[in-house]
Image (cartoon, rainbow, N blue to C red; front, side, top):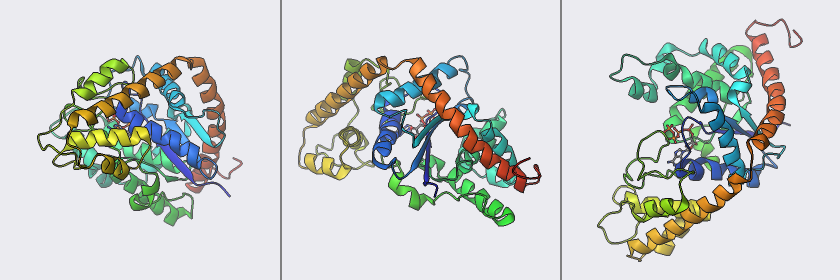
Length: 343
Ligand code: AQP
C-alpha cells in the first residue's frame, strides 16, 4: 500500500529568513527524522509559484538551488529514499494538471479567495497568476495524492478549494484523487503554531519579501548582527514574561523562537520563564540560540555545493516525473484526452 504523502514547499522568491527556517525548514527536517519510515515526504520547490508577482527573475534559478543547499545544511537528508525533493517546473505534469483542474474550478470560487481579494484590491493591474494560483497549488497536491499539506492559516482557504475540486472530480469520474485531510486533521503535521514575527514589529509575521531589515533575520546575516537584532527586539512594559501574542507579542515571539530552536514544546519554555521578570535575560538566551544556530547553519552550508544540490535534484526529478506522469495519464484518460493508460 502507498504510504500517506506529506507535501511541503518553500518559495525561493527572495532570500530566506529565520521565519522560513524555524517555521518550515527545521520542521521539515524533524518530520523526515521522525516520520520518513511511515510517510512519503514531498519537499518540492515551487518555482512556478515564485514567478508570481516578482520582478526578480535573474536570481530565481540560483536561489532555488540555494534552497536545496539550505535544506541540507539544516539537516535534511537529500538521499533519503522516502523524501522527494524536486523543482515544480521540472515536473511538467503540475502545469498540465493545473489546466485540467481549471476546467473544474469555478470563477466564483477563485474570486472569493481572500488572498486574491486582498492582493487585487485597489489595483487595476493584477496578473492572472495571482487569481489562478490556487489551481496550480491544487495540482501540486492532487498529483501526488497528498494527504497532509502543512501550511499556514493564510493557505487554509486554498486547501479547502483543493478538497472541493478533488471531491467534485471524484464524484464525476470515480475515486481519482486522494482528498487531502481537513484543516483540523492536518494539525499533527502543521507548523501554523510557530509563526515567527518581526523582531521590530512583532504584530507582523517575519516575511522574506517585506522590507524590514532590523526586524528580519536573513539566513545569510552575520550571526553577530543577528544576535544584535534579537537583543534590540521590541518588547513591552508589562514587566513579566507571558506567552500572550495579544498583549506581549515581542516576548511571545522570543519564547516561540527559543521553543523551536531547542525543539521543546512551547509550554515547557513558558513554564521555565514564568515568574521571571528580566526581559534582558530572555533576550540574551534567544540571542545566544539564534547566533549559534546561524553559525552552525552557515558553516554546514559552506560545505554543500551547488553540484551536490543539483545531483540530488536530478535523481529525485527523474523518479518523481514517473510518479507524476502516471497520475496525469490516469486523469487525462478519465477526462477523455487519452483512450487508455497505454495511449
Ligand atoms: N515568519 C514565519 N514564521 C513561520 N513560518 C514561516 N514561513 C514563512 N514565514 C514564516 C513558512 O515558510 C514557508 C515559506 O513558504 P512560502 O515562501 O511559499 O510562503 P510565505 O508564507 O509567503 O513565506 P514568506 O517568507 O512570508 O514569503 P513572502 O514574503 O514572499 O510572502 C511556509 O511554510 C511558511 O509557512
